[in-house]
Every structure is written in structure tokens, then in C-alpha cells.
Length: 130
Image (cartoon, rainbow, N blue to C red; front, side, top):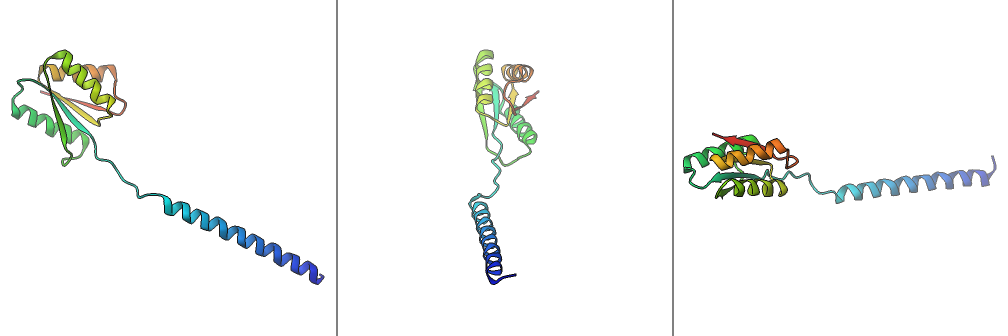
């Protein structure tokens, strides 16, 4: 082999080494840009008919948190003035991507049952509380 052939081979190897190093560095930078894996807490709500006793609402909050698998998450409690109000609130909560929505009181339970039956709220879990 001539000296020019050896130099050409070394240059080719050097070029491959540089390309590999650049690729690894780019991959390392891309991985460094990735943020840590975080999980967002579940969004939990209770739709309660106006006049529902506080003890029943507390039971619904516990049931919703149990369904979500998170006892520490803040829970939104909404009071419904009647059946149509409860239905509207359930639909709005589904549209807001709540994880779990529980219903307590006559109108609250009915609205949750209807939402569950209509399969609204992709990913929303519906819980009725007696």
C-alpha cells in the first residue's frame, strides 16, 4: 500500500470518528433538554344537589378520591340547583378533563348516571354515591 493510500484511510477513519462523536453529542444534548417525567395530580369533582347533607358530600369526596387513587388531591365541590343544572355541570367537568366526577343527592347522581351512560368525558371516571 502506498503512503497516500494509508493517509486516505486514516482521514476516512478520522471523518467517521468525528461524525460519531457529533452524533453522540447531539443525542446527549437532546436528552439533556428533556424535562423530568412528571405526573399531574388527578382532577376530582363532586356534583351535589343543593340541600345534600355535609356528611353525604364528605362521603362523596372520599369515594371520588378513592376512585382516583389519591387521598391528598384537592376536590372541587359544585352544588346543583336541579337536574338540568347538575347535567350541565357534569358535562362541563368532562369537557375540562376531570379525572373523577362523583354525584351525590338526587340530581347529582342522576346527572352522573346520564353522563356515564352517554360515555361523555374521554378518560373521566363517573362515581355515584348513595
